[in-house]
Image (cartoon, rainbow, N blue to C red):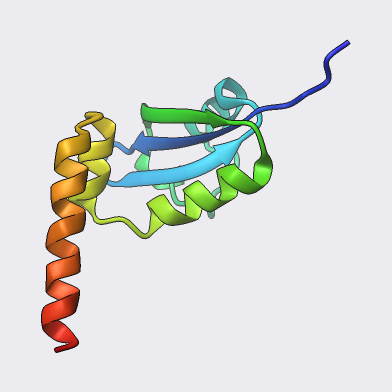
Length: 106
């Protein structure tokens, strides 16, 4: 028997238009938890209903956590390009960010 487990990183769009990024081993269960509002202190609690707009599955938890952290640091525009799977736009945003950083640091 194969007991391997996969790890999914996901982005939800909240009712107020904000994005929430998370990771889980059971996407369907996790989205249901967000929709039910199990934790009144959770980011999504007062922003329900939520809608899954992007997800990707990874083989290891380490990989999923690294991607989740990376995405949490992304701008809204970059996340929206990812959601559209517009790799060219993601690349252009990265180039623009790099230029801004270089300009700031001389």
